[in-house]
Image 1 (spheres, helix red, strand yellow):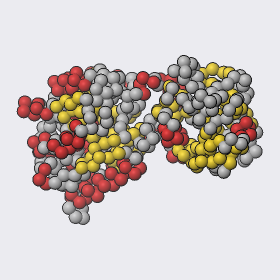
Image 2 (cartoon, one colour; image 1 turned 90 degrees about the vertical axis):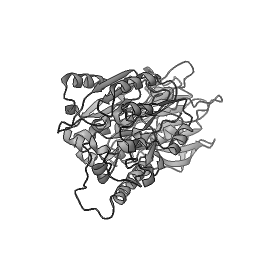
Image 3 (cartoon, one colour; image 1 turned 90 degrees about the horizontal axis):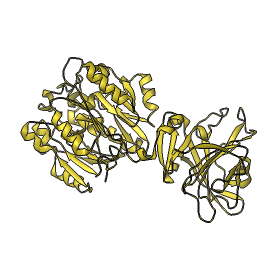
Length: 515
């Protein structure tokens, strides 16, 4: 952690000085500094009260010639858009005094959607450095109406900065400058982040999906999946396959166009004999070397034993060749366990805290205890939490990811489905130490509120993917809790797939953590 101390105006930080008193966040031993200037200036631009100008020097960007290549600035006087030219004296007026050579690049931060009479949001209330290349950003800044954008200017050498680009999203700008961005509910939580933890990722920006081009009801899987239904409950125009494909294409669009997730898309045909191929997360998983606090050690690809013969056929050689060609340092193949009648169906039965190395497993016909223990030992995970979960009719929950999901700092779980008091207590004690738990009812579990998945958007920020059915089943308070921890919630209507296939959005997504 970097200590925050008060410094006087005369003290320099990466060639800059803050007028009046400022908060300087710094680390020695060659790590460049960042400064928040807090000078007060009169606002004659229509705002309700005086605001402060601020400057933040981005770390790692000072040059040997005395220049700092990039500085974030919040102007003392609120602007109403970008300026074609930014005179250097405006920066002085904002409390930033240049010592020696001038910064090459200035990024002026402004509120995208604050009303004309609202006070602009201060940078010190929006972000803080928590490592040499890591920035913690307050969650509310990531909500659409609170968004901050930056206008970028280059120095022309003659006391003026010339406009280069208008209105870049602040988080995207920080990522462009090589910084990792971590979302926190509030900046007070930033002290809990460590640079070592930032190397492990809970979620991925890349997934593998299989379009349901030959989707039909799977009689084999229906034997122990109480979420499946043979009838749709309503008249559907055209075939079920066409209806499911329409829904799936909408989900694909939401993920790729809105969440900006990279999707490796495959299809299947009737000759494959794989009616449930749309749920690929059950037969393989991938793991980064940094996972489980470095316990995984080597990038790893795992194949799993599946209960139903027609689901075993989903392990297609053509897809396996592509996965193995990605260059994983280790391959773990558990599929031979099928011959012994033991099953362990991937991230359907495994819900993982990838950062801390905890595996949550609801034991069932598809989640063998011995294989769970073997998996934890083989992958180098730190803890295994097993329990039994049932639906409102008392039937065992076939996959763990139906009743729970784990994100970076928030988790969804149906606690009432864990009927054993001791199991439930251990579950809650373990999960609540590191995550805020959104407790869903069994009715919400039936609406697949537990079958959600945290992904990363193209800015590296966590977002939650779910079905529209699940989204509508969450209460407003529960949605607000989720939004304190993720930059967005993305959902699509896949009612037919959920009703007939018995799986939700999470089941359609096999995460790819590339080596």
